Length: 519
Image (cartoon, rainbow, N blue to C red; front, side, top):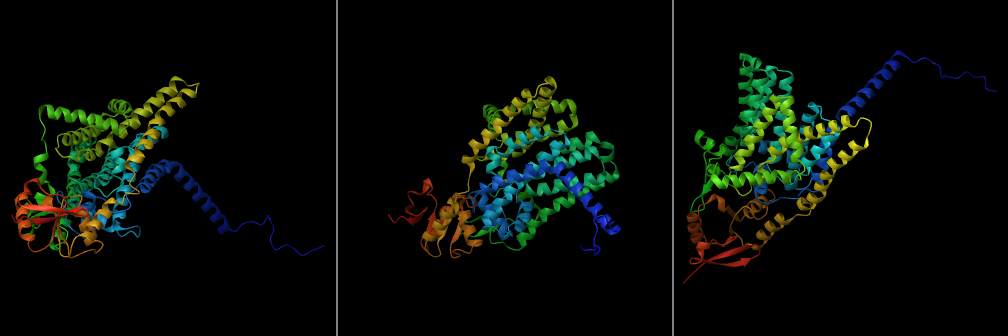
């Protein structure tokens, strides 16, 4: 028998430091548990869509505006109106991520902002005390809405705009609850930054001003409130200084200007107030604004109603209308804010004559999603109180609410999935492979921006000059080709109809080589 005393006994008292450590660990575990319980829905609202967008993301540079936006951002260049300085400033840092090529990284930026939008909408619905099921079903409809999903897969400006919009609404709700002048300064700071990203932020300002003034006008209009509002707005608007600073560096990629008949690029002078104002206000698109009248305008209104119905799989229209009505009865101040934001955005873009305007209604999607959440929550509450002793009616309604989300996911996914779409890169590489040394390449958005991306970002074929036909008039283009075709190879994406008597062309890969007629 071993009679040696044990060096440790199970009943030995713990030292004060050990007791404190256990207490601290227990407290931290409790806090982590509370945090997980409070924010599991928020984490879900971001992580699930981000995963969905990532696995369906375009794997490399994409065409049209996406290629222009990516190239301008990464090279420190300049875009056409309205400049998008906030996007380009943030994008230059995002592009440093060590994953994929630069095109993929900027596509991923849109996916991140799309998921961030959904996170902010979840926080808005949480503020309104909307239940879990109603919130997640509303977010599900937005996440898989065709244009919201597709614009989260390529480098574009729209999902950053909706993310900033969601944050703006959250800050306004914070102002409604805690009306501090400092909060007002943060709101105007965000508005200034948002204007520096997308001029469509002006369509949100009436709703924001409405909410600030109808909730706490006395605080807003105090000298301190006014001063902080002005200071915040000016600091936010200072993001526009990015544009003249980039202009000073004489960037190689510059779409803020035009080419003349000699092939010389004439940039807009962004060091002058006139030049900067021309770019940031989108004066080059002024003719397309408020362009419909009479029956044409009515047809556009009908088209928008159909577009919104398709976005939310039709079944989202009823809950959205119901939710808007419920919000007006319960919180007319917030309802007025959201309605003004929705109506101003919808009216402007309905009356905007451009081919791709269906991509521009995402802010109305955000508002409608909030209304859907409210409407669905009200419906579920009514079913629950109407049948307190029966669970199955509530479960049936929940299934009916979930089915459209699942159906929209199944139907929309194959239509928008870009995970195997290398077409833009392949087209650009084919063009650079086919054209002869020192060639001039002319084309629209599906041709030139990707060529410039491959040249300026990846260093391919620096001997080739590429000119976007959007930046040169028809007459100057004709004169330029007449002169250049005699001294070097000239290629174009398609022959203008008026050139048949002056030029002829031969197909070379994805483009045509242009020759001057001798007869």
